[in-house]
Amino acid sequence: MNPLNANNANMSIEQAIEKFREGSAEAFRVLYNSHSNKIYRFCLRMMGDEQMAGDAYQETFIKVYENSHKFRGDNFTAWVYTIARRTCLNIIRGLRKHADYDEALGVVSEERHTDIMLKKSIEEAVASLSITLREALVLREYQECTYQEIADILDIEVSLAKVRVHRARLQLRKILEPVVREYNGY
Image (cartoon, rainbow, N blue to C red; front, side):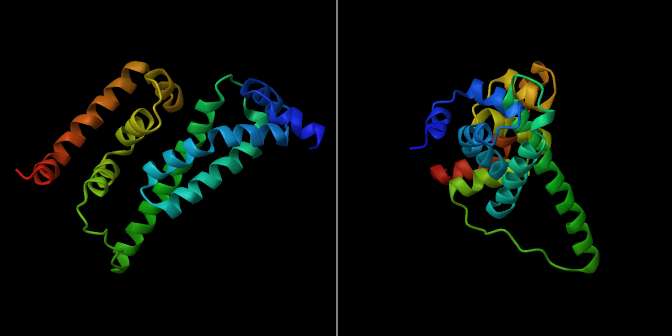
């Protein structure tokens, strides 16, 4: 094994963050390996589609690498989630413009599968939430972020992060009530 790689294999996240600021590709690799799964799952929940999530995920890490010199804080995780969030929102905005264009042309969009399995119903219910509620819920329930981390990522107050998660849960409960009844055989 190359001694340089042996040193980098033992690099802590804190050390990687410091070296990342200096432009180290190896530090980027360490940070990428430690954050990639969570960021992909976040993108998947935000986008609701594997291909679009993959695109958002790749674009996120390209932006992270290209903007390493702009990272100034201590919370690398919040910074990466912020980039992922903005990337997802930009893609969603682009899709809306495209969907409006398709509707104007009379093009029928591909319909969602009508399978009513519980997992699919939950995914669709989450996807139906407004972006602000969805991102707060995804960060809390799927990414297991604290309310403080959610506030940092979304650049909002902690109290607002709590309110958004609470409202998202209430809306999900309302949306999923008929599905739960059917699932339980009521």
